[in-house]
Length: 216
Image 1 (spheres, rainbow, N blue to C red):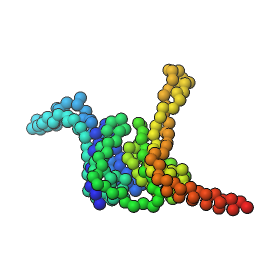
Image 2 (image 1 turned 180 degrees about the vertical axis):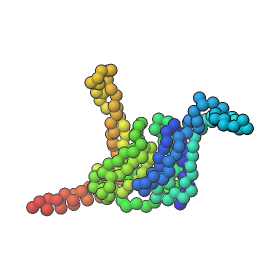
Image 3 (image 1 turned 90 degrees about the horizontal axis):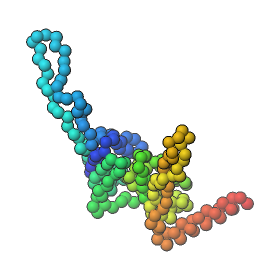
Image 4 (image 1 turned 180 degrees about the horizontal axis):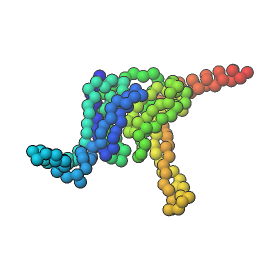
């Protein structure tokens, strides 16, 4: 078990997930704790001459950030490689890595996936030939390691990026000029060593031979 600190400096509520469920909800930072326009005076209905008016309440307080510390984060969690995870405005996530962190062993080949988005919090998809029948879930800005099938398109790479790129601008049918949209793109980075690539190629050849034999 390791300790991970989560900090929310954004003006949005942040939901933390773990194992397919909700781990914690971080209230927004970068906000007033109440509406400043409400002032400090309290109002009440005076029913008796002996009743006292309530004292003024404290002035509004600016909450720069909210935080929560997960004292017993499992070492297999996607959060475990980091000492601090900070959520900022603009859907940005800042990571402070744990020194001398050693990732747990996983079935080969293992790929580090990273989803980066300006708006979306979650990206789900079925990895081709994935060991699981359930869709893989990626959270914006937080890398996650997944064991993939040796014959999948992800296998030759150590890292796979899901990113957003400006899509072709479409005409707005209701006027107002052009509308800017974004689409999710993906690409692999950091190819595996030659020996591992040869192993993958051999597995692909064996798979193709089995397929051909099955069609005869």
